[in-house]
Length: 110
Image (tube, rainbow, N blue to C red; front, side):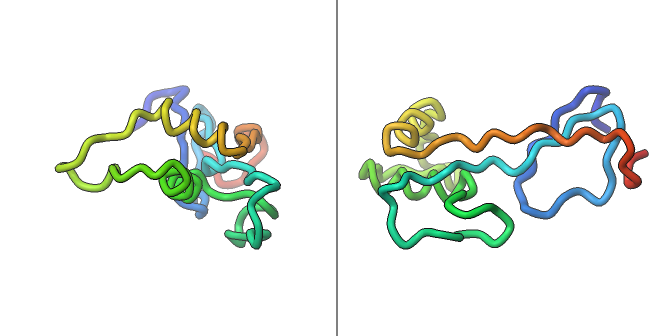
């Protein structure tokens, strides 16, 4: 069981069915795509226009940078997260900043 004050970062667009009053819940990590990207208006139906989940951005950044390595499996090198973050910013992606969900007054809290 998570300790009091735990921060949850989802890996899915589906919200948890129950929330704890003593924990924090963030939205799925996402980024605003650059204006230079074409034909990408609503990539994912659960995010706003020109917003893309961080894992999709990571794949695009890998292609833009010409990187051959990947994070899948145990046999390959793990990419340095700051390197990927800096490359995303360099390629025009911007962080999507949203507040954490405050659980006060929500009916699905225990």
